[in-house]
Structures are given as C-alpha cells and as structure tokens.
Image 1 (spheres, rainbow over the protein chains, first blue to last red):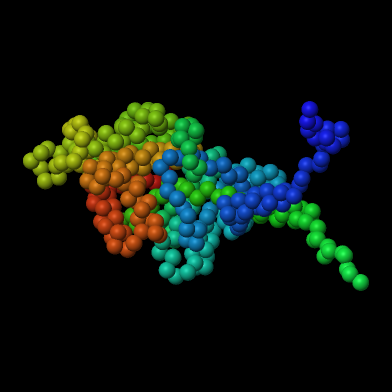
Image 2: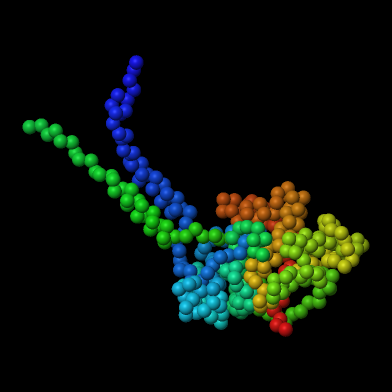
Length: 160
Length: 205
C-alpha cells in the first residue's frame, strides 16, 4: 500500500500562506479609490434623503452648488437645538444668507459653466416645506433657477 | 574565495500593513456619493405678468399640514396620483374641428378636463408644515406622468424611449451629428408634452 503524506500526516498542518494578503488588500484599495470621491464637506446636519424613481444623474460635479438642509447632528445640537438648519460651505448659514453664498459659489466657477449651474438641494426627510420654500425664493432672487432635489433611488412609497 | 551568499530578499510581510493603512485612509476621507435627483427649473422672480387659465386646464395638487394630498377636490392616495395626472394631461378634450385638437392623445376627451397637453398645467401647492419627502413624492409622480407620456410618443415616433434619447444626448461618446438628431427628437417630444408645473407661493391662513 502506498502511503500518502508520509511526513504531513504525523505533523501539524503547515501555516496558511499570507503572501496573497497584500494583493487582496490592494484590490480592495483600488475598488474604493475608483468608486468613491473625496469628501468636500463635513456634514453638520442630518442627511437622510427621500427616495424617488424619476431621477436624473448629477454627474458633472463642477457645475453643482450643494445646499444641505436638516436638523443639526448630535454634536451641534446642544447649541443649536432641533430646528432644521441650512449648511453651505462647511458651516451653518441662515436663510437670508443663502443667496450670497450661492453667488459666491457661482463666482468661483469657470465662466462657461455659470449659465448651467445647478443647485442641488440635499434635504433631510425630517424637513418641512417652509424652509425649502424660503430657500427656493432666495435662489430665485439671485436667478439660480435650475434646482435638483437630490434623492436616493427607490420607490416613493418609502417616503410616506 | 567564492561568495555563496545570495542577495537577501526584501521582506514583503509589511506590504499588507501598508496597503491596509492606505485603504483605511481612503475609507475615511472619501464617501460614495449619490448624485441623482429630480431636476426642476423654477420660474424667474418676476411676478407682473399674469395669464388667464381656464379651470379645466388646471390640475391642482395640494399638500396640507398633515401630509394629506388633495387633487381634483378630493383626498387621494399618492399611489393613484400618477394615473390621474396622466389622464388629465392626455385628456385632449378640445373638439375635433378646433385648431388645438390633440391628434395623438389617447385620453377620454372629457369636457371638464384639459383641452390639450400644451394647455394642461399642473399646480403643486404646499403649506409650511407639509413634509419634504411627501413633496418630493408628488414631484416624482408628476415627472413620472410626463415621462410615461413622452416615452409613449417617443416609442411611436422614433421607436426608442424618451429616456434613452435623453441619456444618449448627454453621453460624451456620441458624435456631434448624432447629437443634433437626438436634440431634434427631444424637442419634438417635449413640444408634444411640455412640462408645465406651477408652484404658487405658500399662503398662510
């Protein structure tokens, strides 16, 4: 009879080779490098977006002005309370300042993109329409008329 | 004397640690962004020109403080909203001898609903305490209704959906000549079903 594994059977198992571990980690690294983008803002407000089905992609980042609306997150809550706030440019601003900040963002864009600038309203699900309407009238005053209600993909019944 | 020592191999054991550090750095500083949403354009901030709209051409949607949706004088479920809007826009109620008769409409041609898609106007009214997700849902249903009708006409005329034409038009790999054709097609379909959505200012009572 042939004896298999003459040496191994008696001894303990050889250690698992970790030579491919760096490769696996590099694959993960490249995956994250390609699918993610750098954060340009630190979220100061809660931001769970509503869902919608008829969405259009906002893939050209250079012409988008972002406005976040939502309740302050837990760290800021102690000072600011529960009311929804507007965040632009990494800080809280009041509704009256929205126009100024939007124009400032617009002026930092290249000339040829200014006419196609879109304002992306990223509002939390807990926000009421009052603040959104105020925001919209401010944007209308500075003639920024293209807006995008940024949402997640999903059935609208999830909103109700 | 012969040197028997081979050049020493570089220890690659720490490679994994370095890669992990990089990975964690990217996990922390980046985020997966969702960049989709409902595009809308607002009217300019001029309020001095008024147009008379016939009542039959106006489809009023109101959202109240407790997020009930009212359309056509009745509280309706959000799930029924889209078909109601489609029925309204596609009604084509103008009589056949009239100039504005809608030849491509497939609606019921009711006398109390819109005359033709060009005249049909959707109005979305909200109150300050209405919640934003409900508003987004209503916007979504309105856009969905228009997309449904535009897709239908696009399939009839050009054998592709409106969404395909639209996404091809914004695709950078498409040649300029083709884009011209696509743009014409988009304009034809948009002229058949122009989006007319009105958002009156919130009135506090």
